[in-house]
Length: 391
Ligand code: DSN
Image 1 (cartoon, rainbow, N blue to C red):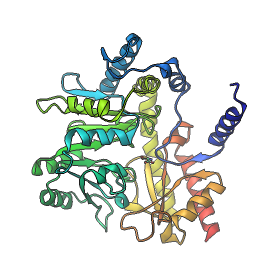
Image 2 (image 1 turned 180 degrees about the vertical axis):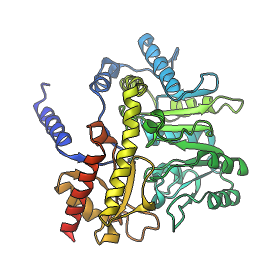
Image 3 (image 1 turned 90 degrees about the horizontal axis):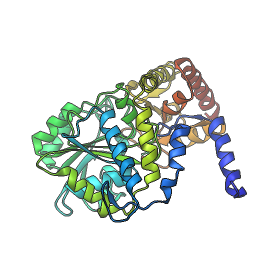
Image 4 (image 1 turned 120 degrees about the horizontal axis):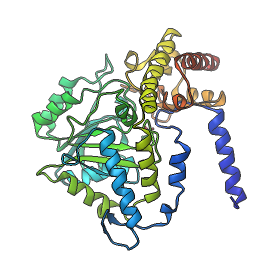
């Protein structure tokens, strides 16, 4: 690279990424092949429209690429082209979710129901600070305050009272297995669409290590860079039927929200989807969960309160405040010790989101780097030592 200033920063970032223990559950390390695709000549191309229906010339290779990416996405999750459609152009998870709402929830009269932030929901599931909470009325549900897991009866009661247009089942800080069948029943009981945001879970679902939402959802969104281990980007799957959700979503992505798709990222997504079909990826997905369980068990053994008592997925929430350390202080102390995580609110949060009660930690990135259960036991012990040091 001729630009020495940028090169120096990139080299420093490579070093940093190698040096730290990365526990951010939404991060991962993509393969060289994915990065090669993202850095390819497809970054030079405008391709407004969809395969074989573009607004610019010169898209014959783009058309092949986008079609391949979509075929691979459907295949990876065992979906038939006659039943499911997939859009691979949304630039990332937030615009993907926004597109689903734009397509399906009438502005002014529609209502979104999702999990509250403190229980583990995402900003784009109708939170007031997000466009999804400004353009639409929204209502949130919480986890049960004692068990810290979803109380499906309470969610159903709220859904029947509020009658949302769409229910979002999908989370960024919920460690437990989600009963998607129950969410389907809840959606049916109030006439709502069911959208699952599986951004955190996509790789685990692809690797058959976590239940699939596809038998139950009308729409499934996901980012491609978390457990799926691809480049930044998103996929929106929608059921093909007389409601025409698939067509409405395509229109909402382009021209509704975006111009030209980032075709270099679509290339990277296609590569990642291919990689996720391999037996090695299946083993990876299973190991991610085994590692998280071992991690949670050791944290508990060392005396730390783990939200909901453990995990069924790739992440856990540690209530550091129960041990006398705020999330902000914990995050900073751990970073000093070479462990990267993020401060996080916990269910029933009593502190501020800027200095909440806990930290969120996960295993996808370090499992990619070869960590096994025994390594996560050591990570837990290191965390314990650091946090005890700041008390
Ligand atoms: N920032 C992502 C996460 O960490 O969960 C969600 O957008």
